[in-house]
Amino acid sequence: MKSYIVGVGMTTFEKPESRDWQYWDMVKEAGGAALADAGIAYTDVQQVPVGYCFQASTAGQRAVYELGLTGVPVYNVNNNCATGSTALMMARQFVEGGVSDCVLALGFEKMKRGALGGGADAGSDFRTSPVARHYGIMAARHGFEASPPTAQIFGDAAREHMEKYGTTPAQLAAVGAKNHRHSVNNPYAQFRDACTVDEILAAKTIHAPLTKLQCSPTSDGAAAAVVVSERFVEERDLGDQAVEIAAQAMTTDTGESFASGSCIDVVGQPMSREAARQVYERSGLGIDDVDVVELHDCFSVNELLTYEALGMCAAGESGKLVESGATTYGGRWVVNPSGGLISKGHPLGATGIAQLAELTWQLRGQAGGRQVTGARVGLAHNIGLGGAAVVTMVRRA
Image (cartoon, rainbow, N blue to C red; front, side, top):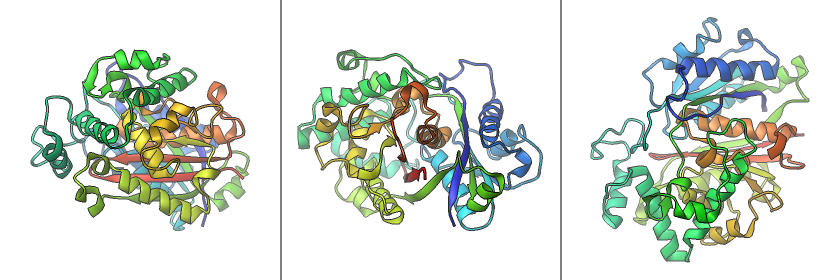
């Protein structure tokens, strides 16, 4: 059974504490926008998976109650930075499994200012953290420094990539420059200022070689998507706005993630590669069929690692790929037209759904000044340490 996205919505992603609102206000805004976009009422919704990392249990219910009190099941979802795409995956499974015809996937986060720690609930003791094994690999090879732990593990992955393949600081900075440039045309983005490679290199170092302008910020925000069955599309005459979820896959860490002792593997490249392989196989589409990509650039190096995992280039060639202009307007693909996590922002529970909102607008031709001309096929990639990788292929008929 096929599934379709027929409505999307999101709030502006903002610096924490920049607006006097609660997480349920965010969900009301994003969820209400998605329902309006689909042209349906909350009473049409049969199930609601809600993703978040930093609020208490059943915060999903508290948030959804602002949309209506219909008694439908609400599921609270937490999968670190892949939380939003996990909620979306649940919605798709409900529809494709024939359980429901109309499901609302929601994701939100209200975060604290400052650098993100080692995981949503990691606390200060990494020995008992869910990601202790990952940080143990990092510490064994690179030590454990005073810099923020997530920046440290990805920064160490960047160091390994530079040592192994000759990737340069300028190539890493080119990712940030591209995504900051893209965000200028995104009214939902947390940052909307263009930056040059030189400005990015000159910014404050967070964990060498990564500077502040190559790191995703903490953010407040919410996103929503209405996922429905083919029958629902036909009955409600929604074909003109429907975007098909052609395939989707989630993978977690395997032995390969830890066997090499490399931070490149520990931060998720193997599980991203496997999720992409499954999606290509299930959809019958490959990376050469894709026009636009929203991927998990939590740090600039992860965009480069993901190019390789998705098959956009060979291992070690990603620095040259971004430098060539192949991943921006006028190139082979447009990657992160939204500005990505680096510039659009990264409220953990909302990120994965916001990626699909951007792809939905792109495939409908509704992305305004950031529109990718003729976009018909899109791919989203969302990962979380600890670990989860979700890859989603969407297309327009």
